[in-house]
Length: 490
Image (cartoon, rainbow, N blue to C red; front, side):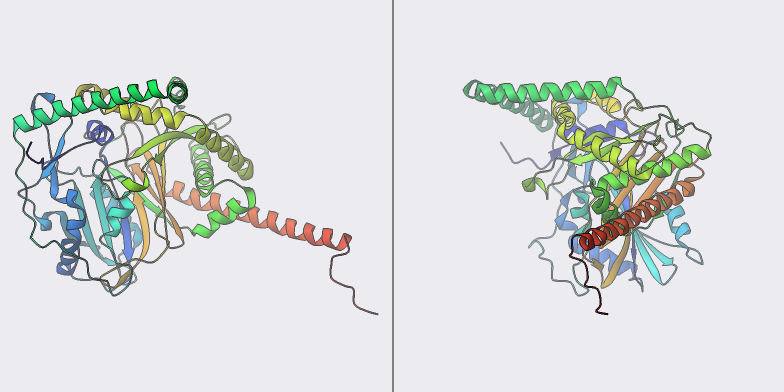
């Protein structure tokens, strides 16, 4: 058989397409702020052009097979023009950051054109303080939060003076789109291969009955726990309403060391502290809207990477999602952190992630119409109140054309019926939040941003107080045991 010059979307990637609608756009990205002076537009084009061969998907568009003969395909775009995707704009004076955030919201309010490669990169000049920015916008089917760090950094350098990037010997030329017969044959071959894989697993199960029974039991338990999650819906809140196409965006700066300081003092993980801070901010925001928080626990969809080391540089999504708790009913910040930490540890030890992975694998063999229905269940308001995704970024400086990257504010997406998404990304000692909200449902998004700052400040203050008390107690104990400092001679 001749070599195929196309890729079929994974079941998870196809589900993002099925979820998309006039009010729910499935693109993600980020706001990256650089020190000045800004390069020219032509320099940015050259930078992207010189790295584009490292991400071949960026020159591919979607095509949808006729007769529903499988999931959509990625094919080379014969009409690809880099200048369409890399765009230039400028902020009006004074170039304040809230103007940059408003521009980000407007750009992310617009859907991507499915007839072209699903990405845009905006160069923004005129940011206050002599700075400039790049806004990246990519469809979730093209890129996921964990592997997205790799895709973004191919445009960046590790030093102000970059190392040469190897280039292909021949210039890029698009491969022809496959014909209907080839696509149909590929779909049939995929079904046969799926059957062979199932047969192989069955044969292996006969040879290793103990392992097979254990795996079956684990999968069954996982699906059972996932079913329990579905049957125990997330509570109704002002965050779960019909949304429109327009967005608001707010960025919140923080230092990564402050999260580590809280974690080191009270236990848990950095992500546990993140969820606790979000819980505190939402507790205050809901209270300001007159919502009773007694006994109220929100559910956050927390994406978890299942990408293996050998898949780290492959395109496409390798993620499952768990429902993390946001105990807004707890007033005490430390008690809130303990509750979150215990619950997240329990989820990791449970089989809920295994069940989610099993469903994702099963969707790979589902007809497109069934897949579309299943994807709507995945993002149902019954399951969660909002998305909270924490992406670990590089802890070293990055550069574009010799200009250092100063800040990154990630941008998530809003599924249907969800008015708020919180994305967090660490970079070079920073831990920045990006809050995306429906324009009409959350007009006071800045209040949630300030609530995040206040909730973290409260936890840091408590951690420092507890550490100081422990140090005093330790000194007192040392003196009582005769190990304290010697008394001066009289």
